[in-house]
Length: 405
Image (cartoon, rainbow, N blue to C red):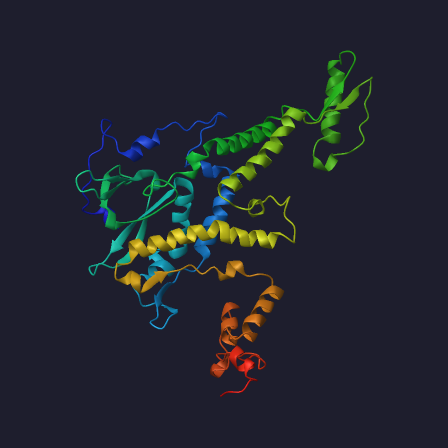
């Protein structure tokens, strides 16, 4: 963790604050009257659910490093120094899953994810340490024109890191810094937060009673006490609900429902859930809204989720890894690629039908199919043979009657 050792950082004070320091005090109150920041946005269940399905899905995908073969194709490169960093353990304290999960969360929240590269004496990246995006920013040096990163550690010291020392992934922005999805859509997120708070207070305070007991006159103290005790004894609690109520002395009971203007917050909450799903391009059924999902379309929605939501993030990761973690010469031979086959698998009948077509057409072997189903190869190389239907011959031979000349 070189950031804590021998780093010379620029001074920062109230007269000359760094960009990250200025952003901390930018206004975040929304029109709904609640404050929305990157730090508290995850308290909203819809935001948490939408982010969680994305960053856990991406973190769960294997990320091997491949080597291109001279004759075409590729093979895994487990002996490369970067393979274990991406696939197994990002640093001595984090697994690859934890690292990718945290970095992706930073992307979905702040629009930028930063990690300091741990580099050995041979110039090889042997570890990646995430940096706090709320306390990290990038500036272009006016004299050299090169990018420089500034990050503040918990002790309050601001450190400067050169561009080559930082692994940086960003979302849509100016090409260098990404924009925070939370800040871009804080009004929609603020309304979701406001409706959550309203609902909690509505049920907590119990301002709207479930019913009213009417009496034409005024109950005596003794009659009121007897009525109150009888209500508590006979009708309070879930186990005593729906019991017959007997009223004396002209008492009348009037049931009261939730007023329409108060009940509308339920529809508002439902709409905001879909708004947040739209922000992160997540199918509503992925975050608990199954109203428009059926057994017929939910599988197709899941595939669309992989293609339209997950794949663009994977491309960001893969290209950033190639550009920032591999040397210029190594990029011609090595590349990282997420494995998404498991996410695109259909039901067993659909998969087996696809395997049958590939097997009969000669571009899948038995071992290829077994590997996709997480099965070991057949013994003695029996599964390596590629087969094809015997009645299929080249078109030029068919024109000559199937005979070789």
